[in-house]
Amino acid sequence: MSNKKLFIVIIVVIAFAGFILFTKVTSPKTKSTQTTPTVQTKKDSKKDLKKDLKKDLKKINTQKVISKGKGALTIRIANSRKAEIPMRIKAFKVIDARSSVYATSSVGGRMQEVMPGTYDIEIDTIPQKILKNIRVAQGKETIEDLGCVTGSLSVRTSNVKKTAAYYPMRILYSKTNDMVTAYMTNKSIDIVPGVYDIEVGTSPRLYKKDVKVDAGKDTLIDMGCVVGSLRVKAVDESGRDVRLSVRITRADTNEIVSSAKSNRPIDLGKGSYNIEILSNPKQSRGNVKVSVGEESVAEFIIKSPIPTPNSVKPKTKQ
Image 1 (cartoon, rainbow, N blue to C red):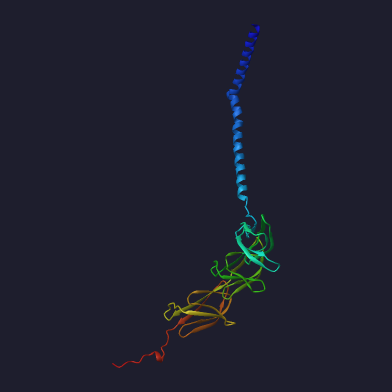
Image 2: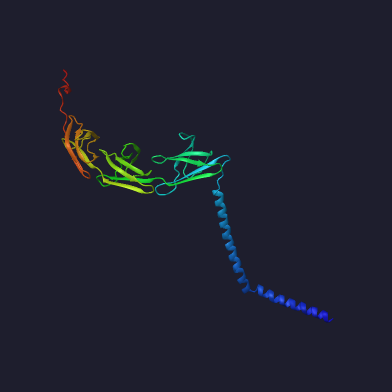
């Protein structure tokens, strides 16, 4: 009997202790302290999951599959602003020490599969740049990071009105007079580093010698105002403008500099010029001075042509 009572007492004590413990766990204070770290942990786990997904996607995107029996070649090129550019590339497989054959073409920054071997690479810069003996192994990607391979060149010119004047321009190899490329003034061109001569297509032509271009740098040649202006003013006896053809030659060499129309400004370099206006009869004037940045005017009065005897028709008898 006593054992039975003892057993009941023990059960009551255990039940009471369990009740107290249950009350503490489910109280509002305890619940708030327990749930806050749980929510924070879920946020952190979501962030970690996103990071892991991004890493996995990046790995998938960067994985490059190379066909069986081939290798791969990637040429990375940057321009004068150090930005990677998709410049045209040609690959020539080397046959022997003296020759190679065309294999494929691609663009900068793009992987191109090729047969294993040694290649010469032609890059479509101005002028074209050639890389020799690039080895491509089977099952591997060969990456040639050339960095910046060009510099920037700009020739600035203006006219009498102090506004930008666009003239044709030739870029020449220094001291050889061989043309590298043709372009325009007041525009920027990316070109392989080196020393060049510049020819500006004014009348007559202007030259700038030994212009140095460095990789990754902007070279600006400010020639300022390079011409003067000549206006050949042609009027009739009543003072009205007459549109006629005009031929201008250099006073010292008689070289033809320009063929234009009267009453229009003509851009000319500094010098002395002969002017011939194709009126009837022709009129001309020699040693007309033109100064850079100034406007010169040569005026001609065009008289009515004198009729010749042959031009007078005989009167017919009625």
